[in-house]
Length: 438
Image 1 (cartoon, rainbow, N blue to C red):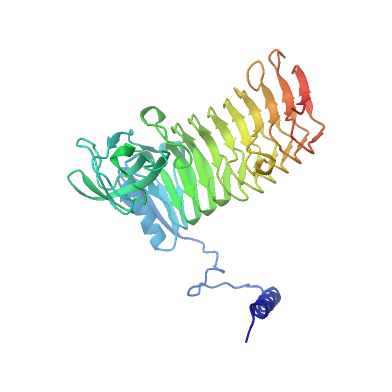
Image 2 (tube, helix red, strand yellow):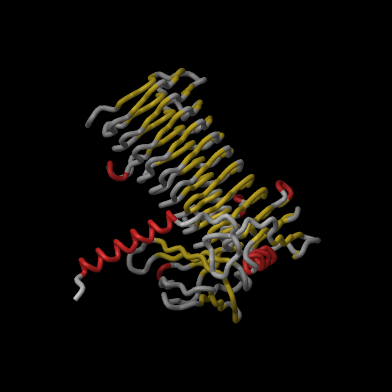
């Protein structure tokens, strides 16, 4: 009889032997496309490209339907590029990205935006297992639209938010693309709103969005925060590239990705959002964020929760309420050579969180320029809570206004092992302040 211990010993030895053989085997020097082999692929000179345009192109139109059709066609043939020709594309629903697809625009001449939001009450109770809703007459929704469904939880009172698509109808009664999984009862005041990200994706990989303008039409849309939407919203994805994307004026976030790994954001301009310019979200590993302009947002760059081993460098972060915010278990990140100016509250903020075990430890802040942060009591770098083992070196912190009560670097009472070296701090009432223990 085999005991559990003997089985584990056997399986561990087998895995070790397999690893050894993998290291010793010859390298692949002449890769070929082979059935069901995803580990090795030839570097093909050309892949499929499908163009979309308002009046010309392989697919003609200016709605989410034509963009979605192009994405699906390219994905079904193994991946490639959807070329978005000059024009204005007004969406009634989110474009759902697929693995292996690159969205390539025409710069400022390719504008993707959305219809103004509107909200309808749900007239009939829908249970958690239902896959349909009934809207109030005059709602204006159509088959194919994206909707944001909101309700107060019947048991606990907290808000529930779901994103769905309308796929069939009889009058004001619509079938959804997925079941609710939440009770939408009348006592919870359920609603459906025309709120959605412009591009979205879930559990996909190897995608890119490049050289395109995304406009959230903030003035004509309700707020939907970055845990659900943005100009782009991604969930549980990997190997993502944003390059030369202009994301502007979303009543929420600009570019938001949650539990997404190896995300590259470079040479983008994210500005005028009610929420966050860039939102590397919960659990995202190894983001690279470089040479971007993040302007006039609530927070320019927001490290959310458990963002680790990331690099943020050479970004211009100007005119935000908070320039850069880092906190909940965001550890082991390098933030360097950024220019953070004219933040209305604070330049760089380490959030206090719920206690030392939740704070942003072992991060490096180096070679940044932080100018004119906050009001009369503004702070260039504010390290709060029980943050530990942070290095702050060779930064240039400046105040060109009156010194008033402004502080260059403030360290919270419970911070530990703060390494400050070779920082140039000028124009403040106080250069470095360590708050006393309570």
